[in-house]
Length: 154
Image (tube, rainbow, N blue to C red; front, side, top):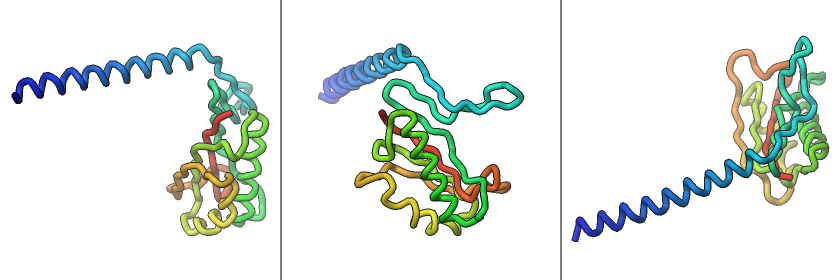
């Protein structure tokens, strides 16, 4: 009885594994057919460094946006960053309501509440998942108090 049960279980697992592998293969080949499209490329010494956004299939990946201006106050910086994200999403053919994932990098975790006050409600009724971290030594690049990146669909 135990041997028969193990045999059935092995067959079921093999079947599920085969389906999963086939599904991943199909998805990988789908993505391979799509051409990666980059926008707003930043260069350093005339060499491409990174893109403001990258599209692949119906997905859009937005690079980190920061606020590199005075006043150095978290609510003002958060407002600037969210506007930059929204502009980049619109240029790519997406919107704040289509954002699936946001990463928030704070220069100081003490700014969490102030960032949240400006952030709330900006992504519609069904907000994206979010990760928020305070960065270690050196802070967010370029004297910004907050940086955000996101992943959305078109």
